Amino acid sequence: MRRWTVALAAAVGLVAAAPATGHVYHSSWGYAEIDEQPFNEPGGPLLPPSQAFPRGRMKDAGTPDDTHPRLTITAFDAADRNLYSYSVEDAKAVYRPLDRRIDVSPSQIASLRYDFCTVTNVRCEPSLRIARPVPPGGGGGSPPPVDRDGDGFSPPADCMDTNSTVWPGAREIPGNGIDDDCSGGDQPARLFATVSTNWLVTRRGTRVRRLTVREAPPGARITVLCRHSRSCPFRQRALTVDADGIVALKRLFPRRLRPGAGLEIRITAANMIGRVVRYRIKRKDTPVGRTLCLPPGASKPSKC
Image (cartoon, rainbow, N blue to C red; front, side):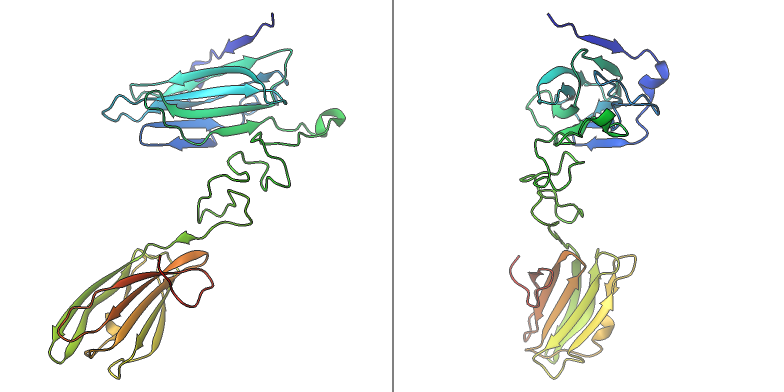
């Protein structure tokens, strides 16, 4: 019968320390920090092929419910067979260390998988997979593993074979600069700026008392269109958002707008789905905005 040897870290300082650099899970029910170099001694050389040293810490979020987290670490060989697994839990909002050395000799560990889930009413964050790095020189002539990050996909299908959260069919996160699902590029994120207004409606027309764009990305472009009325002071104006994400547009409308005039506020930024708000000036009626979306490269807005 094969014997598994697991050595526990005895250093007191290691138990309390968080990883210097690593992967962070931060959910409503728990928090975890994972050192992304489990195949090396802390700040030192690569461990033997049969060994790994997962490090980090985790704890419960301290919310008033019976849900608490469990972090499970599983070691796999090159054929993706489960070699060893253990878990760390916390229900008291106190940091629990990950400080267990693993030795599965004579087998060899090709990758580690981290699963951060709740113990009850199981909910999980996306798994993290860390592959053993290739030694300098390719390990004495041995070819590097085809699937370096251990996510089950190899290049060219896997467009980023150093990140286990990136693979064909993965959940795409718009606007993060990463092609998560390997579909050919990052999907644009939707821009969620707001337009704040205040109008003074009289018999003679409607006066703009407040027209302000807020929460726009710094550097975003604001295009204001005024159409269908001689009362429009211009047809088009363009402005740039400052570092505070605020642009006041009231000064562009020094006089009343007559019924029939149409205002359009376009808020756009690079690689983002723009936001368009339209207003129609009506007789004795407060204008109400209609919101549309403007995909990157499009000239006409459409329904969101």
